[in-house]
Structures are given as C-alpha cells and as structure tokens.
Image (cartoon, rainbow, N blue to C red; front, top):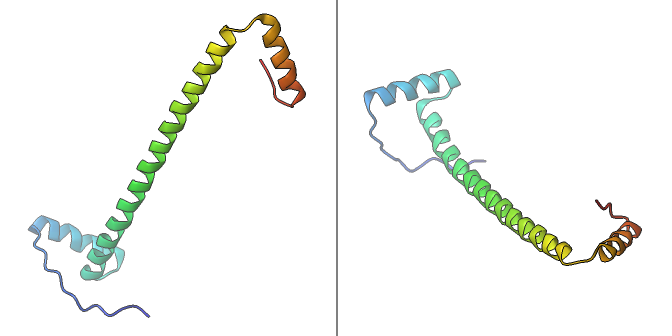
Length: 101
C-alpha cells in the first residue's frame, strides 16, 4: 500500500507552462497533480542515471588511457629487442594459445 499524500508543494508557473502541463496531463490520462508528481520523480531518476553514465564514461576513459600506456610500453620494449628475441617470445605466446602478429 502506498504512503498517503499529506504534504503540499505550491509552485507558480507561467500561463504557457500551465497550458503545456495541463495538455500533457490530459494526453497521459492523469490528473495534473499526478502528472507533475511523476515528472518530479522521473527527474530524480534521470539525475541518478546521468550520474551513472558519467561514471561509466570516466571508467572507460581511464581504461583507454591505461590501454594506451600498455601499448606504448610494449612498443618500446619490442623496439629494444633483437629479431631472435621477438621470434622466441612469439613462439612462447603461440604455445600458450595467444595469437601473435
């Protein structure tokens, strides 16, 4: 069972805003107060989802930077090896099931 609605919030809007909210509530089949209540709740949910997306993007960027650093280290290491050392390393990787280039 849902909690009773006991608190009141008074909000002033422009006539144009009121018209748009009223039309949208009619189209949705909800009373104006229920429509506005759902908008407020969805706004909170949206903010949470945006925060989660930002965190995911940050994690991907950190991952990308790490990957770039690893690739740079590997290229520098490869440049310092002889052809024979590279061949032996590739053979060892192939024996472990890794595909080499």
